[in-house]
Length: 476
Image: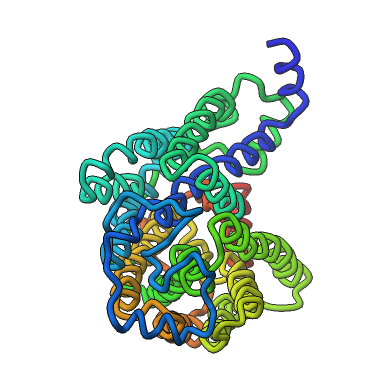
């Protein structure tokens, strides 16, 4: 092993695991959002004739667009070069939403499989398949656009966005849209090699972990290798209002967030006139803000709980007000900025930044209501939330097909603001942040297993008291 082995011996296994998850999530977001920027260079503007309405609006656009960018967002010119695909706005909307077809289908079984067989094979295998599909995507896109939909759906089976947006923009500008997918796929393969060599499902399986760290993890996480996983009480889950208000909030969050993430590059370029490279960096700024804010806010919320300055329910409500209602207000303000690009980018950055509080709010509802089944419930919640971009992105494409100026974007932003508001109210009014009786549906004691929830986690008082009770019962 040489110096590599000596370095590994000096790094705790749990820290290496966190680093690999961090890099893995970065790669998965890169694979997820690469087409959002690449599509700008893929579409041929000369194949679609402008309508008389677009010509009239172009002259009345108030100078929002750069001279080398036409009014419609599917008519992009990068240094005089044209894309090769004749896709209108509706087709582009379907393409951008197709990722979530597979994302929707595999969320629930993925969560359950991870609970049963471990995260290493599930997460590593998913990234490996995604990387392979990214490499073959350009060839299949040239064959037929329906094959592109299939690949993106199969790929569906933060800081990641901060890296992905500018990286995709730079690659697109330097080497063309095909390279965006090739680079994404190669990075996925490199990560997978490191993942399989460095990550293991349990401390006992890890060949390089120290004896002290192995014992530390066993003392704090428990030994769940031989614990039988209880069946999910699906009837109770489906009829639980406490869980329902959580995934309603997820619907609003996903609608708004994907309005920003999926359509953001099109808005910055098509409506405000940024070039590709500039657009990629401006698109990454809101997500850099979100990552920083989520880290700071999560620590702040956790401090409030530990010092008993605020109840768990109070933290959850405060978080959803910040993650839903503030972006809703920002979307309305964004729709009124007109051609003021500086103000538009500032509002866009603020709106996406404050979304970071979601990880301390509704996203923790599976752990709040049923920690024994948090993995499966998180899969259900994500699956329901992923329905929204399947609907919202084609709707946005239809709107832009008729009016791709700032007036068309105004309607898209208002719809997203309305979804944010309506979907937050049931959670704010009805959620109680208490573990539900069906969490322990079986008569025998069910031990809580270590569940992987990929987010910033604010400690749950309900969860802590529940674990304490289990510990005391074992000691007694």
